[in-house]
Image (cartoon, rainbow, N blue to C red):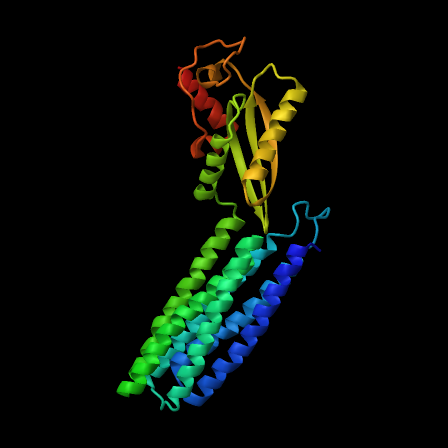
Length: 336
């Protein structure tokens, strides 16, 4: 097990332990006050604990090395963890809305709201700090599970702020209806958070292209472009937990030897690895050029040029993701 994997497990274990303590505190506050708003916070804490346990298991599983059955490793299990967390959050939001609606029509007497406010506020602050730590650690170690868990914890804090404000209003005005309304509002906010997490993880699991990331790759390639990198296309990215597997086609001069083509492909791969902060495995396939490329080929002294140079074509997002068929069709169109 790598040092990074151990660090991710340690972080998630501490977050999970803290979540259990915070959940106990929130249910004590609910027991003392009978507040539907505090009940929403307590119910979301159950999600925090359940999701934290799932995340810990998935992070441990994701740390396993590649094997014959999983040639790309086990990293995608972290996406499953984040997806399950999103589903649990939606379920908790639905329960909260049900409880809030019930209390709206059948209000109950509230008591000891001051203690409930103190406990809820303290738990909210603790969740925010834990969430910030989890997000920072997740981005450092490229763990989607830690990032998703941290965002959930911080969304819990934002809803807690609103709940505390609502509880203070109830205490000051004596209008119990506010308590139920707050539960309904923040139940909806919690469901929205769950849907957002699900959309992100589904996009990753289905290998949806990320335009922002592709744009960063295009910037790196243009900044380090060599004259014999005639163009780059058919680029694909697969995410497996902390690792990215990237492959592309690099068009090189047709007269290059196998050794020269290999060196050019290796240079491209090493450039991407050095310039990118991500952990990537970069695979490059060499294509040979033809006269359709002459109008934008940057080689200054090509003995085999069959058409005059017109203008440089920067590597852009659209060109990079073109398939071989699309790329060939577009090149023919440019020439004609």
